[in-house]
Length: 459
Ligand code: URP
Ligand code: ZN
Ligand code: ZN
Image (cartoon, rainbow, N blue to C red):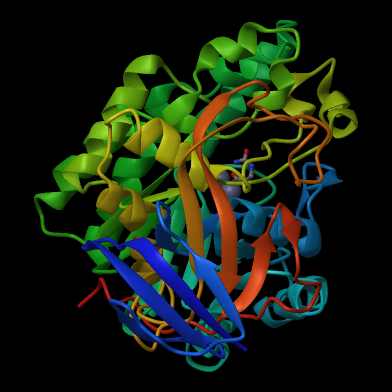
């Protein structure tokens, strides 16, 4: 199959120009003015933007968590992602404590290989570290193309590891050229605040927020960064939400450390006042939404280059699942649906409102994730030889977000009625037309596993 895209405004992390793009098979073959290839399909992109396919490195699909499974599986989740212009995702394999990484990998392969509609890779979450797991970590990097290892400093009793395990993991990951990623909040503090609130009868969603004050994230982000410094390991902090945490890492960058930061679209757009609503459970996630002042700090962090990635932490639960915690906020499954609209939100809220440039938008929604997680230049840019993952985007189209029109398998939207300017119109995945006229033309199994290499942002 060949596709010729005419007259689009090609935007990458560093360039912005009008051109034609010619795609043959899975790859971009030519970029230039007035290209004259005969092709199976021709797309007129006059007045449209052409971005590299979005990469969301933080999603949870069909994940067992807090007594439920996140409601999007690999099929519905990656399809919804494609609708919004995200062509690749990185999801999390969870090691069962006491079991091997290889068993967890097999379980996740069964969930994903025949179901994914869009491309995907995995982070390996290490929830139990010992000498056997250490050997498996090396095999994951060298044989399986899984080069990033997720850790949790919270979710005590379920996913959390202690600092001793963390440091040992960092040492082996550093030696073999991988990256340690982290959910950085202080699990002990949060656990005790949750228990105290429940004991005092404080059961509403607002107490989820009040049990995870800013200091819990700032402290853990600083501690993680210090452990990285001690071991020399490169690291990545997921879903950063607040000023305190950003400042903790800002200091570390003066030591010339490799610590990358991700925030998520919800932390740039929503704030903790939502927890005061009757339906506040819809936004119960960890870390919680913060204050308006934190949004400003995060946007600034993006422009300062301290925050390199905007993901979603997509982890949807239906209203019935959320109702598991109607009498106890600690039983509300944590997470919300977001995979579909990240690109449109960042364009509308970021570029249109003058908070970030168009190039920065591409950098944080695609290119940096590709570089940090070892997929560049195959993914994350528009260049000859790169995968033809392309988004043709109408920068002026206005639309309204609603559960009635979204494609995620979740019976509510956390953004109901939100007005957005800019819409993903056509999406190519490795040269295949994935989305056109609001329809998905790919099927389960068309998405492929991305075997990753070492980070190109780490020397
Ligand atoms: O609330 C969240 N974030 N749910 C998913 C698990 C995690 O901590 O990323
Ligand atoms: Zn997390
Ligand atoms: Zn997450």
